[in-house]
Amino acid sequence: MTVDAKVSAGTVSAAAMDFTGKTVLLTGGAGGLGVDTALGFAAAGAKVIVVDIREDADAAFSGRVPEGDGSIICERVDLADLAALPEQLERIVAEQGGVDILINNAAIYPAKPFEDFTLDEFRAVQAVNVDAHVQCAMSLMPGMRARGWGRILNIASITVYGGWDRLFPYVASKGALVGLTRAWAREFGQYGVTVNAVAPGAFPTDAEKIHPDPEGYTRFVLDHQALKRRGDPRDIAGTLMFLASDHASFITGQTINVDGGWVMK
Image: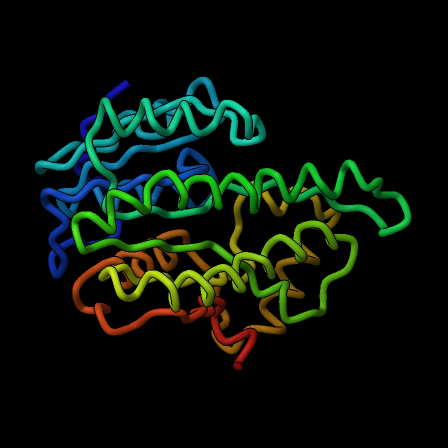
């Protein structure tokens, strides 16, 4: 389904960036950090293909005051079905044209003690958070190489720096994305493709529902941040738009922490 993506009040400003003629594929784009990212790119003129498992993904963009040339197209895809994913991506590219910017954002994050996880549960997290995104890169990179231009942006997490328990499959998956960012940046740079990662801090999204004491968790977050406000998904969207733009054309292989000054490395 296509949703005109003209920006509502509060969406990331696109005044300084122009993605007209560019196509973005954003996994997990209908929830959490994805919605504002999709709206931001679309407001700057991009065609945004939101890949999400939700059947009602398009509802996340309904009534967002459309204005401008960009658009959002929602494609229901189960990233956990790795056998079907290559064909799904091939179909999307055939229908929508080549993809210039890939944002690997989708993730699952079960939380429980290490000893309560099974190996199959660990593998299920890696399948969605890592393997599916490797397949996205495999499917889309040939087009970027042929055009001599591309951007791959991986959503990591500040959990890779330590300090969080009960999340070992998730932390392992985000560490893998940091490693892939560096490996891909080294290999793809010769083709004009940059690869970077963004590591969000603690953002008030559905992911926080795993915490039994929301108010206590908010106090914990603010105690650790240098900036004493909660992050907004637009903070992530703006960073991704910068890294995808020509303003960041000489930045590759980097992991940018967007966390209010929680981790300083």
